[in-house]
Image (cartoon, rainbow, N blue to C red):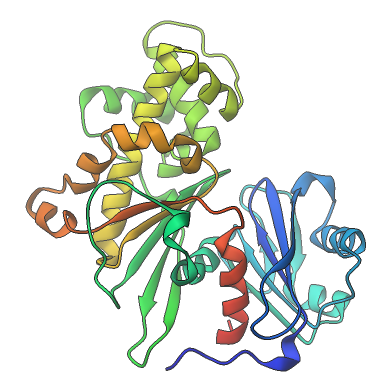
Length: 327
């Protein structure tokens, strides 16, 4: 299957990347045109996705689109979408009728991000350690934001790519030493099942800070993720410890994902947290933990890892590609 040619009847297109906290919009006027009218909003600003779309179109002075492509933080398996880490719920068919769309594509947000990977420029990537991608090989994608997203991108025999979405962020988190085991035990007391998302997300960074405080017999204040980052920059030992835990866990989970997908095409880290941790990640145990897989360490050593640091979310271009693939 070769890369599909965009259907001219699906333009102009509205593109949306919806996470647990923010929704990002962009507009594509015609085939081959660049993304324009890019804008970010907080999901909480509007009661429904339809209201958010209406507000965007009105503020940007745009007409109704002929097609809409949405990447959203939810496992798409039917007509109803009910966000895991957000308040919006909607029927895909009802939304299409409401907006009068010729086409509507709704896929997982990290599947959309995966589809946007081939269009990334070197300047939009920050390498974590060595490695060189094998052209035409599988790619793994993960990223921490309000939750932890996971996806893969598989090469097609005739050319082009196909996304593989999943809910790997809810896989069980494992410790690699006694201290990490103790941190996870604290989280287990709070949550029962300790998924990777409980540590590798914005709220997860706070969870790690609080667990570390409890283990030292100190108060565990309710903080925002940005406050943990700010405290670390000011030299707070507990905040710095939380970030180092985050980096180590991220390396382990990224290595697991690379093994699961056979991702010799590279591992790409998106989301809103990692770009704010570029310096700590580069000097942390991330890379050693990524490779520390016993007999398969040699398989992982050549695989490159990148943090996506792009001004416009690549998931928007990926959502547009989903329309072309008929997803």
